[in-house]
Length: 595
Image 1 (tube, rainbow, N blue to C red):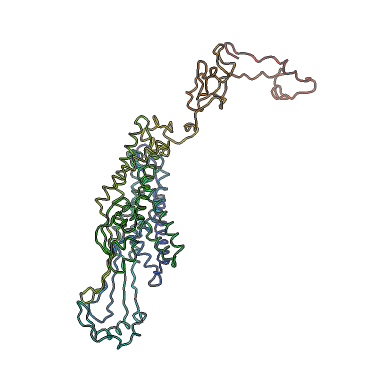
Image 2: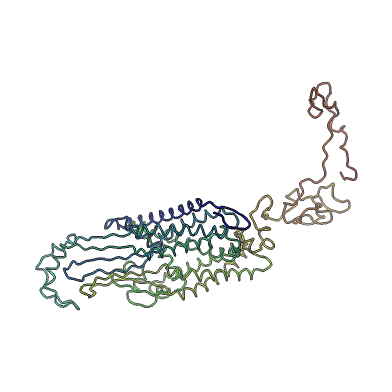
């Protein structure tokens, strides 16, 4: 396969593309399946159903798929009794592991393309990864279905006394069922309730395609050293610093959430459940808390037993009110919630500092211009990321038991972020954090220090960057900037030899005027070696202060057929001892040269 580039003519074997894509997809699905299976096992779900189909269903959910639970609990012997359940939740712990593995292997396959990759090769690699991933999801959709049978005898209902119930039991909406219950409880004890789940094939394939393409796009935008096509050079210094900074702080926040879960598990009576819930849903809780901490309102309601799965004090807020969930309303129930806002603000400030450190600094544009550019770029990226986080962290679970068309039991939970407010507040927080982080980075000297070589080259930082003279890595032909100014007192290569100083210049040894303080470089007439670079570093200094002519070889017979010449002749006892050093003749002097 040819890459189609005009300047390279590089041919990429089709086998290389296929093997790298297989490795990326395989490791991603293996990681997702491992996390899903371990989390389900720690939660004890494998005691109720087969672990394999449940793992396939959870992986499909994590990859953007759709799972439909259904059941037939005709245990009362009445026609039309159905268990209806709607489930819309993404186990982001499974999604995050798959995204990280897929991105790492995909980006690693692009590193061998050189500084610039051809668009045809990039599309071929990304398309092959997407096609293989969707094909594997088709297999998960085929395997991700199972039926869970609940034995009515295990409920212990057959042990209830038949005459222990009153003859008249009035239930609102159902009437008098007192005489009906004893007989129906016996039927329930002998019945088997069946509840199943099925992975929807078409929605799963479409959702998986969108998931894998989104992961690849974010990976390309967040990787600062991965090559891009020639026409995309602006992405290196305009987009990648801010995207990589925001992705970094989001991953650090998830790591902090996992650490908090591990600490909570140490003092809990059932640490396995906390560990399993953290494996599957730690990013769900963290990425739900970040928008709330940044004052993004959420619409939520919860009824029935699902309230116990919500963290405190959100369960109390949703129990008594259907108003939007905000940081202020949560803080009214527990003042410690304000710490969530402080943590979210510090996270955004950290993202601003990272953006400034990874953005090339061009000295001619000034500090304020640099702060403005960082603020604008982080504002755009955060405005796009905040609605995405709110959408990913949405939760919608609705379970109902319908008997003869009458809902005798209803429970559910729903949390949806307001995407419009998330976009607006994301832009405001990004602009403020970008400006503050840039000013802080400039004050501490970190501005542009971590900028990638591709970003420096695209921004033209080679002419004005304070920390690098060239757009590239330091090496023998492109030395890096010194850590401190050059000083002739500590560097002998910057000193002018005493015999080369002009008479009457009044300079002290070392090339300084009498009483002059030490300064970077050599000052005054004759104080700089001919042809030396300005004293900003030591790489242009000459290592030889004057011409050196080796002494002539000692006289002796010329080379002959019997032995070597005079340079290789060994001294014998007949030559006598060598003359003392003070009697050696001076070396010859070149015409017009100085000694």
